[in-house]
Length: 316
Ligand code: SF4
Image (cartoon, rainbow, N blue to C red):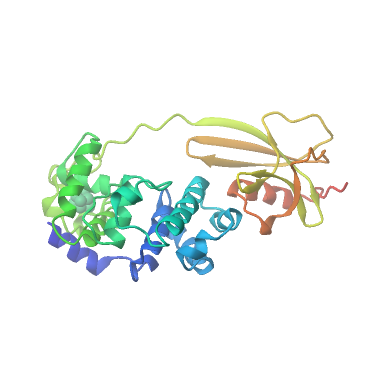
């Protein structure tokens, strides 16, 4: 089965920039960006990031705000903070060379078994397993598992990765899950491992893997306050980024409601009422040009609401 899978991968893999030379730094950056994020979304971010920080040392000496600015829009900003912290550790402790050693990698911020396995197998071609959502689905279907047993999945991935070239095996499982063995409507007729697949044989593709129960959606209603002067906004620092002041209740004051926007993060759905007005700067707020600082996509949405409103401009 491995031969068929790897041959298919060699023929059909997407040409991705981190696959050009398997530079460990590139592989690491790509894997961090790809957590919870589609390849198509990651590609332009990866290109910009590598252009700005072409080497591990250049990233290690970057300011956190610069990194977050390039990350803005990808979400899950803790990934970027952990990455920067881990890269600085590698620069200090390992002279800028990413260690090809599980025990050393796993100690770095943001590096868990998946990330360590990805770096070791894809960058260094070492036989370490990886199980992400795609691999979990492929392995479960191949083996006909109707339950969701993480240990069985990691054991199966460990066995497979030792049966050939680790880099190719892990990537072929991930690629098959991403492009053929999709969650809905897997394209079994094009699948290189169809004859080994128990889910296909039993027609159970739709039931495997079992759908994980999602937490109930939490609805939040927030109030964002926008004050603009010239091209600058009065903004609040938020862990290396900048955002509009937001409250769960509209503070007393002379506000004009200028619109609404909606934003969803995992199972939190936020409805934001955007208000313009003049408010006191308690000291922590600063005037910022939006394009010059790191902002989340939520902050960008609020700015768009304010930008589309004729009466927004508020002067003090
Ligand atoms: Fe997935 Fe279908 Fe291939 Fe089985 S035969 S691994 S269900 S695409």
